[in-house]
Structure formats: C-alpha cells, structure tokens
Image 1 (cartoon, each protein chain N blue to C red):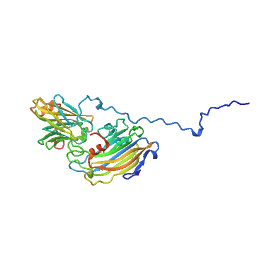
Image 2: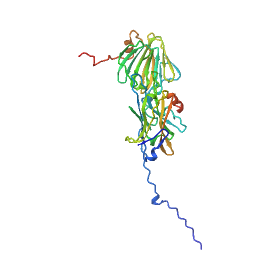
Image 3: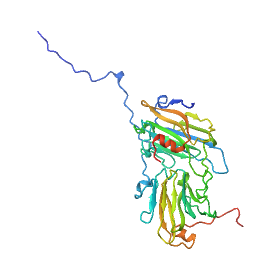
Image 4: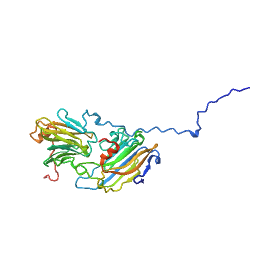
Length: 183
Length: 208
C-alpha cells in the first residue's frame, strides 16, 4: 500500500503488470448532528482529452450507476462508496476519470466539508488489496461544498492515479460548469 | 561465361529467439450495458427553464440529475401524501399535522414533508420514494421548484382540488397534474389516486 499527498501520482498499470480493473473507494465521516447534516455524494466523471465530460451519460453516481458503455460502475452507496473501473474497456475517447464528492444542496441546511473528517480515496484491486491511498486534510473553510478527490488518467498506454484535494465554494454547480455537465 | 544470377527468396522465418509470444486474447468486458427501465418509458416532455402543466399538457419528466439533486419544493400545496419504496406511507399538512409514518433519511431530513409553507422532497434519497401526491386548493395552481431554478406551474380547470402526482421511475421523476373529483375529504382525494395511509403501529405503547 502506498499513501500519497495532494498532487502526487501513482503509475498503476506500469507498476502492476496485468492490472486491468480497479475499485476506487471514497470514504468520509460526518460529525453527527441531531438536526440536518451534510449529505455527501460521490460521482465519477468521464472526461475527454479537452477535460470536459463526454456527455451526461458519462457520469456515474447513485442515480446513474453505470456509464453508457458500462466500463465504470457504482458498486455501493454504503459508508464507503465504491466505483469499479474496467480499465481494459474504458472507451479510447475517455482520457480521465475524475472522482468528485459534493454536498447535496438541500435547502434545509446543506452543510459543508467543515463537518467532514477522515475523507479519503483509495484505489484497490478487485480482491480489496490496496494500490494507493490519499487521505485528505480536514477542511476548516465552511464554504467548501464540493471536492475533487482524485483522478485516473491515461499516460501513453498506461493508467495513472493522481491525488487532488481541490475544493469548490460553488458546489456541484461549479463542478458542472468546469466539466461541462448540464444540470 | 556468365552464370545466371539466382536470387533466393528471403527467409520468412524469423530466428526463434525473436518470435513474439502470441498475444493473450482480450478479456471480455466485466459488464455489458444494462437496459434501463428508462429506455422503455413513453415519451414525455422534459422540464427546462419554465414549464406549465395543465389539462392539455398534464405530464412532464425530469432528467436524472434534476431528479436527484437538492430539494423539490412545491408552493401552493396544503397537504402531501407519500408512499416509500418500502410501502411506508403518511401525510403532512401545511398546518404541521401529520398522520402515518414520516420517512427520515440518513441526513436527518424527512423524505417528504413541509418546509415552512412549501412541500419538500429530499431528492438525495429519491430512490427511497415510490410516489407522492401534492394536494392544493380547488381551481388553484401550484408551483414546483427544482434545484437548478426551473419552475413548473401546475394548474387544473376542474371543480375539485388541484393535485400533482409525483412518480419515481428508475430514479426519474415524472409529474402529472390532475383535478380531484372528490374534494369532500383528504382521505377521499387520497383514495381517488390510489393512496391509502396505514395507521402507525407503535409496539412499545400498545397495551398488551
């Protein structure tokens, strides 16, 4: 298992010959509250070489559990959200798979990442053995309501993972604008 | 005396040490795209910007994202009745009165209820909801607000209360406006649209 910091990357397939599938796990703890609390949602965006989502069919989250070609699929919506990536069959048009987590913009006290602890993203084999892990720092900024956790990206004929940890104050709307998702 | 030039064909056999191993056959995909129930839905107008539902155009369908982000708010409803995918049902009135069972979500918000004078649906948990019925006043319209700012105005020209039926089909919300013909009681309106609210059964307080 390798732990990396924001901005760091790991050569997944180059260092693990034969690796053709990974499970990306995203997890966090929300400080318990008697009232409404932050509802975090994980989402994978399949981006082209221009850094834009190929279409709204190319995002994966709890309400669309497979990409159009089924190479990326949502496995669970439990404590740790898991997204399976069939690396060998990701369409060539997909250059990057971005993993984001947003705070659902409920009008009744949506909250922010300030109430979130132990956020992390991990890339593992199907059998659960961990390849790389990124533990995000605690965020004190109460305005942060969406975060880019990390990305899988092509590098020549290989797949690599980069840890990000980049926050948004504009929530899912800001993410959608940057990646050309229509909401 | 010249000898004919004999050209030998180049060998087509590469040295044994340079023969590449046969490529492994490609692994089949882990999954094939599943056929969603959505692909079998009859066509319905999509909601974008400002839309109107009325007797001539009573149905609209939200897309996946609008069906699952933020809060769906209904202005002008006096009562809402719901049924979850677990068949848990209940009602809430703008006055604060509730019957049946309130479905609480993991974020400590009711799946369906009132927020001030607006009826509200927690879309983060849309897949826990089977259907809901928003009941308004007779001949009065209701406004349905989505997280992206879109507004759907629902009105009816019948004599009974205006109602908006919300159905969740494979994570997609479908809205239908109608006019209840039997406005004499809440339960009559519920029954007209197939809702029956089960009384709450409280094991702890029940006399034995």
